[in-house]
Length: 364
Ligand SMILES: [Zn+2]
Image (cartoon, rainbow, N blue to C red; front, side, top):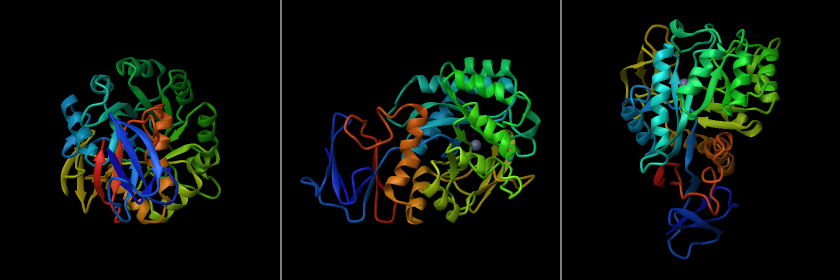
């Protein structure tokens, strides 16, 4: 099988084609395709990897194994080859059950309708001041014993955990995560520049949706944002033109190791209406999801192809966007041998976009 495009991520500026055999990429070649007419303005990207996904297609991924599978399948149709399932702050017993459910799904390995690479725990060791849509009733102080319980419930499939590094005991939790091979992420934090920098020195390697749910940058206290940039740490961005200004997204793509995420909730792909997230009422209007009580943004309704298409339309290069949507998350999760790039030996998980950056085809 041959897939041709005007532009292939990682394969130079001109047209090219990819040869696929038995579900694997066997050749990436520049120049006009021998087998298929070029689609003018088309772009071929590696299948996306989403580190931060709560739901989609009307399914809250935290509810059950079947709901998670349905949400994953929805995102698979929108370019996500592999994903983590993100769990918002909830009572510890609920989180233990949800971690077990996601492990059940991840243990199945790659499925025809998507690949769950594990879970992302967004809480409960987060700042009350910056909790956003996380339910403040269930936030608790960082606790090593509880962290060990989470790790055990995840059965080797807990891949990432977001912690507010300024909380007492947070650095011990970060140490334990790093020791356990779990990505320690800083987020929902009111930490200072110094407090966040310390977390990175302890081995945290990710900032959860940079700019959102954290102390903003001030010239006398630049906080977690500048600490992340200065340490060259990967930062998630929600590129939906709501959470972060498009100009800032473009600037960050140029200067920092950005990872595009969806932070999508169940409303994604369904439309405006009333929903729930972590036991709180959410109202979606004009595609913006906000808590009914506080008006705080409550995740997004963007898909990976939506975030990627916007980044390309706003001027980012194909290679920069491919790194942010596939290469870098693959690196962080240690799956570059099979995902994250268009190269011989990788699985044929590809996304073809037309000249308007709309999804034409996926071989996921
Ligand atoms: Zn989230």
